[in-house]
Length: 391
Image (cartoon, rainbow, N blue to C red; front, side, top):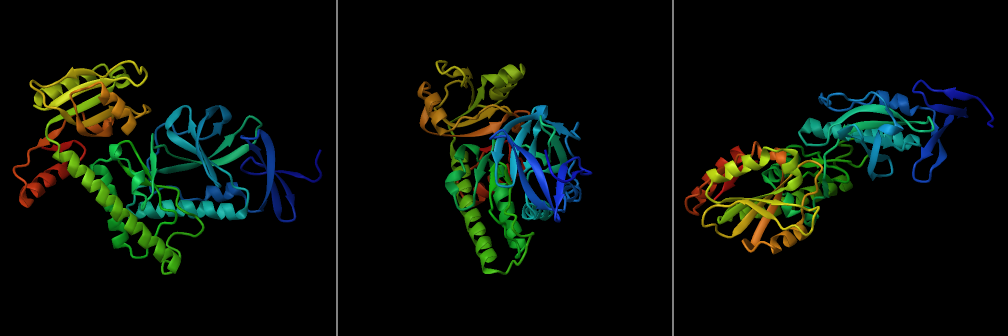
């Protein structure tokens, strides 16, 4: 039983009022039990209704207006304030369930959303925040949350920890995003980003996410702590810029045989992909097409096409479709073991199928190694960064 009156809130939540506070009952999925916490009478639902989400982002089609427990997929991350779940029928959207139990947490949520909006206003790439929503669980308890863009198969990268940025994911987009961030710091002397971290997608793009939310955006920028934060971020970005530049230069300088490795799952999904890749290879003089299968460890990679009188393969781009695991350095080591045509100094990177721009590649021939020749070739490559290779 219970003592006191039960209030049914406008947002559908159930609350017991006592002394200017309210008791919020929620379901703990991990321990499978009901828990309760108190919060100041300012309702979470009312706060969420007035949050400014996004800067005119166009939400995906068929965006849900409400959720129930059956809509929720796998848990993909959690923190003190949010738990991230996939949605079964919306693979490109994440549901961030808010673990808000105190007035401080409500304020932190407001600050986080304000930081995301401020960064997007400045031209810093972040995942898109679409809308607030309520999810009803199997016990008819309601949970507030936010629907955000799901960037698949990401790795976390922090400036200052250059080892976190994996060579196999580096593309020209990576360099562009790092240089864009450096320019934003240069253009905005008050800019600092608390708990600065980024998601790195399979296509190399970097998305700043989950900023610290103790303070609102650009609060007290002259304080020693925030100045140190800013200087540390700039130093870390410069380190990433150097590492990415070195890798891209090395990748472009490889000039023997270039190979595209494509997983068999992608070939089965798109029956025309194989012939399109082979057709592309026939138009180039140094391109091989190879299929591989991670599901069957006993199956060696299959050469679908190779040029006449091929040279050793020293540069590989691995194509994978959305939702399919990309190979890492160890995977490529084992794949290459069964292929004597792969040189010992081979380097590789991953690319998503969709980023190949209809599988067309611009081959840019650099004449000589003078500064003028290098700059002219790079300027051309920069016009089509996702599908240009310098030879």
